[in-house]
Image (cartoon, rainbow, N blue to C red; front, side):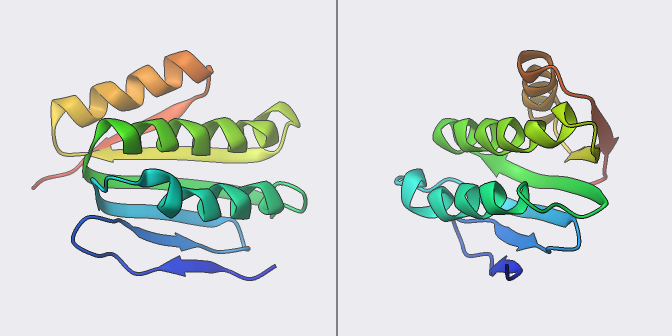
Length: 123
């Protein structure tokens, strides 16, 4: 299994997923066809959970995302929740600058019943 790195573009976030357990998604996500972008990411996560690192840290550092991207963020956490269910060491960090972004993270935590650390950052 290789690390997954996708450089950020105007409408897509940076994806920096390391097989050592450090996973980061950062930037903006407001593409029209989210399936084309996020399918490979979910596939990578499905492979990762078969042989995860001792500790997994997932950092969501998104400044903006549209509704269809939000669905894929939920799918990412839902996929990684399998590790939580196996009592693996998983930490979810949700960085936010705006109240709306924090609220989406809180909804995600409540709907999927996962613990998320909320970290406010300055603009």
